[in-house]
Amino acid sequence: MAATIGKVSQKAKIAAGLFWADYAVLGEQVKELEAAGVDWFHIEVRDGKYMDFGMPRGGFDIIEATCSTTKLEVEAQLQMVRPTFDTYLQLKDLGVSLITLPIETTGETIFQAITYIVEKLELKVGVWAWQGVPTTAFEQFIHPYISIIEYECRAPFWTKTGGSKSPHIIDPIVVRTIRRLHEMIKEAGMEDKIDLMEDGGLNAGNVSEFIQAGMTVGEFSSPLLKGPNGKLKPGTGDIAAAVSKLRGVMNEASDKYRSEKGLIH
Image (cartoon, rainbow, N blue to C red):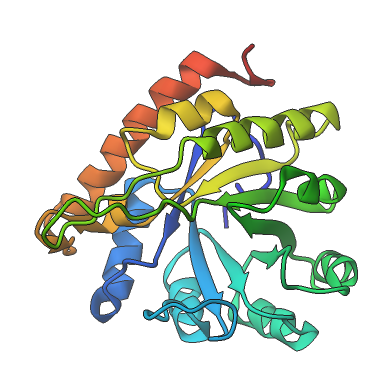
C-alpha cells in the first residue's frame, strides 16, 4: 500500500470522497478512481446523531467494501458524537489507514484517542471541523502525532438560483481560513509533516486559489462522480476524464505556488 497521507508533497493531492458514489457499482467506481490516479479515499462515517442530514452516506459496510477493493489508503472521517475506542478498533480491523476526529464532538478524551490510535492501533490520525470553528481551535493539534488537519466548508453551501438547480458555492472566507491554518502549521515548523485539507465545495474552477493559500489536499466527490446527467457510470471513461481534468489544474497550480519545501511566498 502506497502511503501518501501525512507525506506532504510538492503536488497537491486528491482525496476522493465517496459521498456521491453509486453504491450499486461502488467497486467499479473505486477501481476506476484508483486507476485514474487519486491519492486516497475519504469516507464520512456518521452515527445519525452528529448532524441533521437526510442522506446517511458511508458507514462500516462502505469502508469494508472500499478497503477490500483498493490498494490505496482509506480515511474514515468521523461525523459522530463522542466516538468510542471500540469504534477506532473496529475501523482498524476493517482496514482504514487514517481516522479523522471531529474537534467539536469527540469530547474530553480526544487526546487519549489520538494517542491510542497512533501508539496502540498504529494508524494515522487527523482532526477536522466545520466552517465556523475558529482556527485557534486547531493550534493544540499541530503536533507530530497528527497527519492531517481538515477544514470543511458548510455555509453558504447551497445557493438557490431558481428551479431545481442548486450550484455548489464555496464561501470566500474559507480561503482565508486555509491560509491562516497553513501559517499556523508553518510557524510550528511542520509544513512538511502535516497535510492541510479543504473539504467541501472544491472543483476545477476554484481549487487553484486554495493551493495558493496553502492547501495540500483537496477532498472531491461530486466533481469526480457526478455530471450534468447524474452520477458517472463506470466503463464510460467519464470518471478517468474527471480525475484527469482536476489533476491537470492542480498540478499547474502546484507548480506555480509550491516547491518541494512548501508554499512559495
